[in-house]
Image (cartoon, rainbow, N blue to C red):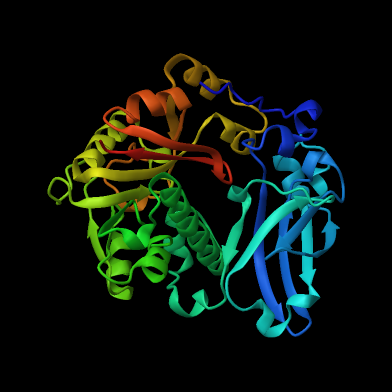
Length: 367
């Protein structure tokens, strides 16, 4: 089992963490992307690599940005143990990527001042053309999956779809476009599933989304064609026969379920998967504590050390659309728990810590 990450990140750990421990949590985000005649401009924030000022540079499609850093009291307060976190806000500009040079897929990655790259999982993807094809719900519905501006809703969906596809290719040699039936469990307003359909859903591929959030499902049915959507109950079974899907994926679903509910759902996913099919999902692992609880949380750490799972934190994001107000949680698990409990009945074929921001990613294969 991976040891607990100290919630107060030490200077010793910070030094050369990208080279010495590429699995470690690293915080950054893009808040807005602008395409102008003078060039591409991105605003966001990034914790200074190794805690050093002016050591964090954003690249787009391999081109280094001109960086300007500004004070950010919010990030500084969230990460008090990270040196120079209060200077995390940035404006990045690429004069060379003006006009049509900023068209097509934009891949952003963070590097240190000497050009050293972080692992590929720290990339973010965006395409301005997605704004014409991806449907974004209103802020009230988006809040069911966490408040997110429209452009970030699109950017996050594109990034996750491409990252999940890359993971599937890694373990099977084939991506989403080579499957016949794909299910997103916990699709919400189809933030990821729209991109899966748009990028990979041609030919014979069928795409399906299910969720306990009937409001999100009704919105999807009214706005999105070519995808089947169904509201499911808080607990299985779902209305699909055994061996219905080649791939089931879930972003930030097992991160919100009680122990007993999560166990029942994992068994249900196994049932609807075809032999040889893959279950891709994310978890809140021990490394996420540095982000979500930078001041430390002894209750979570004690539970993880004792039971391998902590499901004691209430989450109210979808209380308005579910009957059991105790159902939705914030849930942490250790690697050992995921492998031995949720991985029972599967082959564990891939695990990446801090796959997307602070969430870990797992790929299980049904024998």
